[in-house]
Length: 612
Image (tube, rainbow, N blue to C red; front, side, top):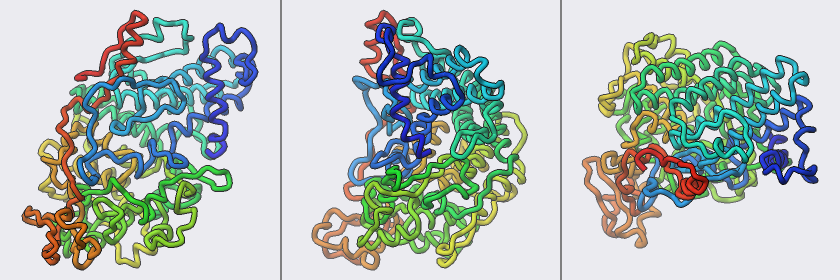
């Protein structure tokens, strides 16, 4: 993927030149490749497709970029808290929300793209030129593969746009900007758009090569993203639209895609958890279906490890609600676990009693650099966190924007969790029930992930296998969620902390109410801290009337300078307050007034997002 980054700007210019007004194309361009001379070989098609990679598969992003990056980008969900008032949902229609740029910014509180169709247009252009310029140039196999690549990226972009905005204009073919009736078409109903996405995904799954070389999209990458987005849309249709027929259709494709990846026997859960995120080279990691490598020599680096190094501040940090969701190592919830001290939320006990992903995700001591005192060190290797915790002599690999650890863009564990959740949802719609064998080759395979030497030295052990005959009895389970689906959702929460999943998950499940700190007070708390023993540096005059803890009985104690011994309890991030009230309109983003006015100025209508 490193070489793909280098040509990104070139091919952004090429696409812009193809998209320009005809009167600007009456003489050969001096700085871009001529359209009619470009579509002459498979290698040129590959080059044209390459700039999709950094857009759709950003990994850790690059330099200090945070868009779609774990830890720094995905911070808006019920898993995290910050000091003072919590980040707000959008409350009013923006003046503008649109872009025709190849590097359009994302919307952090929706975790999706802004209103723009550059990459849709790019895919349509690619399909148009394949059919108009390359018949006879490509073999039938090449034709199917590259058409599948174009249709895959188009489906991927529409999946993200629909998840963000709901109804969006569906452009089924390439057009020039003289075709104003097409250009200014109103929004297409969500179901119609996603049925087209479904068809594009199916074509790609059936025609993209199983092997197109290292770091290139292949059949299994396609299948991985199909499992992600068909699970998303299937559950959205079920919980938001009550369209069970369409929900089942999409969920069945998610299962089919997962079946293809599983049956390939190409992938395995064969490395410890931290190696997935802290290694400089993921090429030998069989959990990685697609990954992004970084290289200091090629000046393609990032900053995410720096914000995992135990020195840099984590202004948005893991909260108590997330901590309580972790299963105990006996496979039971903390309220009824038989593990000693399972009901203790002191960090030392949490590390020993919880699923190994807890120890692999968080530093094992409270740290002031975290707003909740629980510090996430998931996205750095073991040495980096240790060196960083000293605050002295941190090398470039773990500091600034010169990090070189790679990122697993699509991993086998996600496919397995998408697959088993889709099967469980289908079962509620009249399909076959999930059986123990399904659990064994998904959740239990993940729970059997190898432990590294450091985890073993701490006495960490693997979590007991899940048994359908003895699912955990969780008193916190929502009454409208079956036990199995509840536990699958728990596995996702533990597996994907600070990754792409959580906000999109609670949106598709229609559970945005989890973001309400008044009804979900654990969302506004940090871990249990014995300040006299663990954080005596906080017991200073500057913290008087600021430092607060919440006791097990709900009593809040404020530090007054004379009650040091009483400062033991769940930490309240300084000045913490719930976000403003929100309504169901926040499930989808509004479009901007400027975009609506642009349509109106051309005699057309662009409908605003429902409820906005």
